[in-house]
View 1: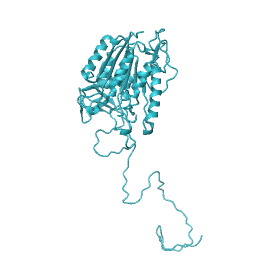
View 2 (view 1 turned 180 degrees about the vertical axis):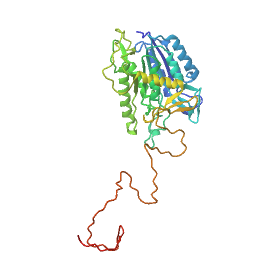
View 3 (view 1 turned 90 degrees about the horizontal axis):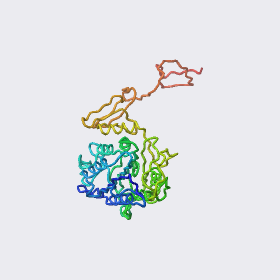
View 4 (view 1 turned 60 degrees about the vertical axis):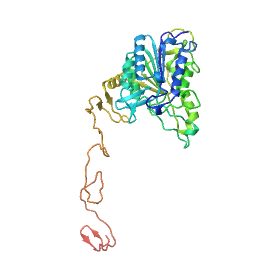
Amino acid sequence: MTFTNGFALVIGIGTYANTPKLNVPITAQDAKEIAEVLKDQSKCGYPAQQVTLLNDADATRDRILQEFDAIAQKVSDSDTFFLFYSGHGEYGTDGYYLTTHNTQLENKKVVAGTGISEKELLEKLRAIKAKRTFLFFNACHSGEISPRSLGNDEPEETTGSNIPDRLSTALLGTGEGRVVITACRETQKSYFSPKEDLTIFADILSEGLRGRGIDSRKGYISAFDLYEHIYTEVKQKVEQRFGKFGAVQEPELTILRGVGVMAISLHRGKTPEGELSGDQPSSLGGAVREVEPAESQQAFQQILSGEINLAAGRDIQNIKIDKSSKTINAQGSQGFINEANAPVTQHFGNVNNINTGGGDYAGGNIDKSQKTYKIKIDKAEGIHIGDNYGKDYPNQ
């Protein structure tokens, strides 16, 4: 059976022409595996001519952008679009990038024009009208974890940066029916073993697309069922293999609040029994981020316009940076620090400087009124109390 309306772009950046230190060949295998299972008519059922695989030297910046444009010309709002990216996410001076085969780095940052910028990614996805769009990112790899790389019981230095939450939020604003699944949370890494052919995330994703451990819903695989399978199996597998090294990997689902059940592919090539209801699932387990539509649109517009909302644990609010003009709008904020070049401390409320002359100081509410107290002393010699020196005080 064919999933006639399914289109896919599958990308694996296993090798880098200009930055070979970023090479992770296993990611090219990830992409090849996912493309194969999508085209398998006994599994997902996507038409072979509607699945585009870009691996290694084929996965250049220009080629990826061209394929986005080509898909936008073919896909209608009644179609399904599946994007899979396995490679490195990195930052440039102007924001986040998905790296490509010809990405260049300068001072550990992506050189503009050599990767897919967050703005370009949003623009290309906005042009794709499919109302069922599933975006999978495996963009932050741990490096190999193996006995030879664990002399001190520590993993190798990690590479890449995961899709930031603000970009996942903005991706939902590119159109109706967007679902984002990342291999791990923003602060985590995606793990693999050199002894295996695929990263753990891609292996479990492939398993789910093959229908293993997932129930059929009218002949389809539901995106939510697939995510719960991925989350449970990836988390468990990483804990079993690498937990003793402190490794944790929790695939994350980002969706608009209130989005309903959607079919991502056929279930083991079955003939569908009608459309899925689109009802909301009763509950979703795992690392789920539900985003309000207004929030996704705001994030989308901010990235496209070059503005970024600053946030440090949600403590800094109402500050915007216009990257194009390098200006900062702090209206509505309670103050901020920009490009500090010395130690900085922050105070809230009034600050009073007190010169104690080297003596003690007691702060707080102090009663400064003068009062007279009676003190009972049997005998006092050589002491100073007020203006009295060495007097004997009779018992009272």
